[in-house]
Image (cartoon, rainbow, N blue to C red; front, side):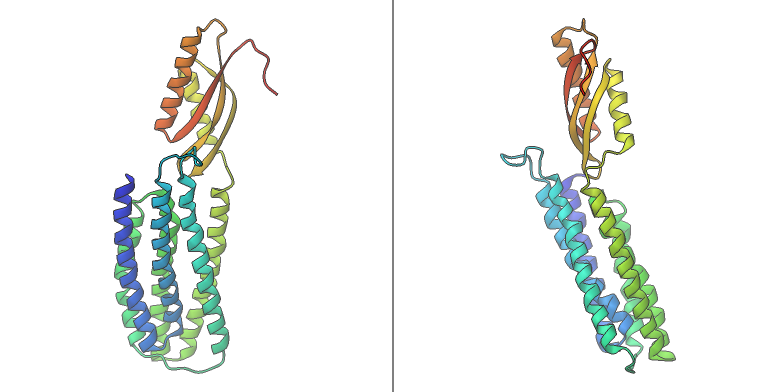
Length: 279
């Protein structure tokens, strides 16, 4: 998917997120449900998160310049980081509210489960769209899927709160908050991996395979993942000592071009095979 099509799709996600969020917020206000309140609070974070992802992704689409020689790809990681911050803020708010409400009876009306049910529609569409987008928004898709899970729990718990006891609704709110913290920890781990300069084994294998196809053997690889499916680095390959300089340069160029088609942007350095190996 090209960048501008992605921006268009993200804009649709924003609209769907706003619609779902407004429905949940209204349901929590008029219905008095704590579980729908937690659901609504994460919906607000959801809407702001997709806006931040859009902004940072567009920045990441900028071409290389004087102080970003490899391009601006990594700026896109600002989106998932912003999302993590927003959801952490929301987790703090709902935790304080639940702590303050502990042991205090309240009334839950049927408006809460009704509007929480309606809100499932736009979030369901958002999840479907996210599955087909760029990997940079996968983490957003995970949190949008949380909205569907939260909607189901908040519908059942607020319905129980309205029909039986507020305690059922309160337990649902606690469950949603605990699950939110779980997803925060999980997303933090994913972001740490994204910025850790990891070099997946399958990428290394591809480099070896492409080099061999053009008659060269890999001596050293230094490659790192910039964002999902985008890799950069440098590689030293060895060719037969009798290989003419022009042909050696051609081999290097061909390897670079082929790997670039696969999202691996590397610089090839060629050495004759009879030179001592680098330490």
